[in-house]
Length: 352
Image 1 (cartoon, rainbow, N blue to C red):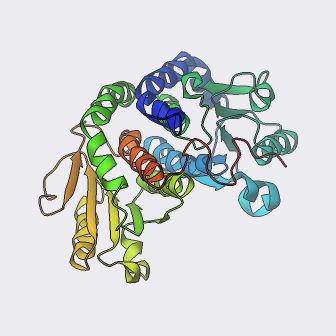
Image 2 (tube, rainbow, N blue to C red; image 1 turned 30 degrees about the horizontal axis):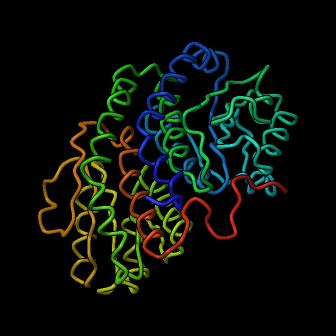
């Protein structure tokens, strides 16, 4: 392997260990998390971030609400910063701010404004324990750190996945859901298996340059993950890619489907039957299908199928969709002669 793309490849390949590390940190804060919710009657929780961590917030909010029944939203930090009156309600709100670096300007400003106006604690999820955001919650709030998610490359891979696990662990601990948290502990082993057994499929699909358009489809908690997969494809390989809710894809976007299209389905259990129907329709229009699901039943007609066999719920297995799709973007970038470590025009931290 050349130096080009080395960091990205290593960070994708080592991420299951980072998942375990992130979950361990969150479990160590279990008492503080449960005390926070015992002291406050939160009526809504807003997860926020920028770029990748905005997409993480979309996924995390669906997981949180699914597990706790407390209303949750995922919003870009820029919306909270520019339009606070239409973002926050009069309810007692908990803000969960997610930032790999802990230095992103919009997110830092939102946390400071929220603390000043609401006089309320904030939860921060980051990879850097000495960052500006980490200091913001040093006295009042909770800091969740995915230390092994730290990266040298610009595009988030290992960091995104490990912070997503941290957000999931946080959500499970709010109601002290022991079986759910236990299910998260089993994900790294499956992650290692995916990286060993499915890397060749990722390379094959990534290097197929006749696939000019890639669509990522996901429902519920998988929509935010589909958005992140789309972003990785754009950032690393400068390829046309979009993300949609499964059934929404029929309402216009399917007009883009033809023989040069790859449609990637992140199949849930809650919407499985309807999601498979969408993929079959797109296959009929000429698309090549990559289906990722927990088991293979009903997927026999598709060209490419990856089954996790995790036995976990839709709320738990979000990170399992990521390694193959991150590798696919990596291999496509390498095949195009690009450097996925340093995507065009991008910086690791956006400072205003």
